[in-house]
Length: 216
Image 1 (cartoon, rainbow, N blue to C red):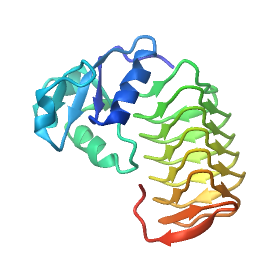
Image 2 (image 1 turned 180 degrees about the vertical axis):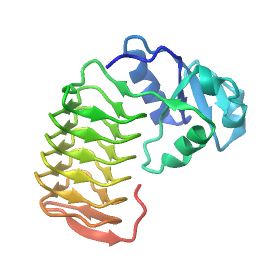
Image 3 (image 1 turned 30 degrees about the vertical axis):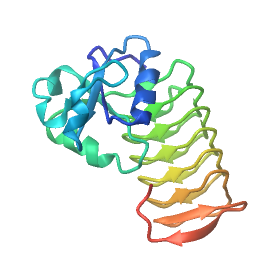
Image 4 (image 1 turned 120 degrees about the vertical axis):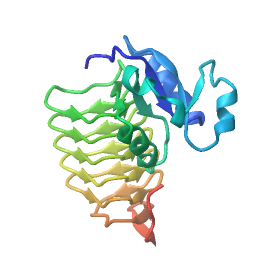
């Protein structure tokens, strides 16, 4: 995947945003220019990790001269990316050099693949998907927008992961499983059956322990 020529601004000022900035510095051709804050303007008074923090309403020409990626671990990051998209900003797709993405698979704008991620063939990742360290995504699997895959997750082939699903660290999802939008799979869970929308599942095998949630 070709690197972005435009400097990169990270949306968010939390610890995960700093982690994404560090990841980006290891991708050839990517230059991290700073961070963007949209909730507390006082955070713009001091640099973060040695980089400036910009208030979202003061981006002005940077909306055209920079690319953006969201550094929020929450599946609710659409609230931030929508603000940038509505102002005409464009998004980068970040793939660490140690990650594997075959030519038959595709990544949406704003998607991030961390260190050691393996994507199998004929797999589709939507916009603003975040796949964390060492996770594996099986063949012919689809991840919709704003999905978060935790470190060490093993997601098998021919699965469909709905929008804004959060899969916790070390979870395993067997093949041909569908997980409904805004559901959460707990850390270490083993999913062996379909998961409906907006539920929390935990355990081995995974069972529903909470309903009517809105992601994580």
